[in-house]
Image 1 (cartoon, one colour):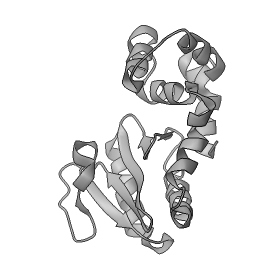
Image 2 (image 1 turned 180 degrees about the horizontal axis):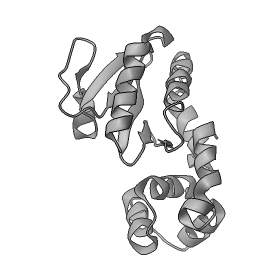
Image 3 (image 1 turned 45 degrees about the horizontal axis):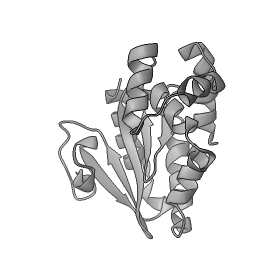
Image 4 (image 1 turned 90 degrees about the vertical axis):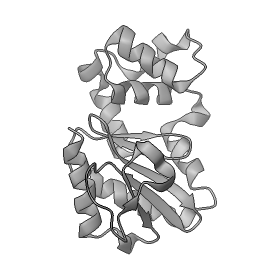
Length: 180
């Protein structure tokens, strides 16, 4: 489990009133067809915030669907991109302790109160980094959201760790600040 996710799990009892194991017990008897049904159940019935609800449902799935396995599966055949992913998370983890990293099947959402970054290994040689920067004009590097649609307003294509420069970190920090 990565550091940010582990921190979230550690903070879960204080922030939600129950440990991850207690939440797993609650969800065990439920049969949600869609991930979003479980998230909505926790939000509506238990008053859990979206970030925690999403993480609880994700981590409550079978062992093969744990956060670590979801991420490692994303990088199968794309192992050369994993150091880029790690460097992105390292930069993001410096923004504050209110960041939630939520692995999904094909991407990783980074959430404060709302998702502000989306990390997706798009090809064997490129990570697409989605950003929520409403109102910010596009540039050659800071492109439109492309395949992310409304999940993000912009997309940066990253092919090496060197692409994670101060400009990119500033854009991620700006998205973090706007997500409050």
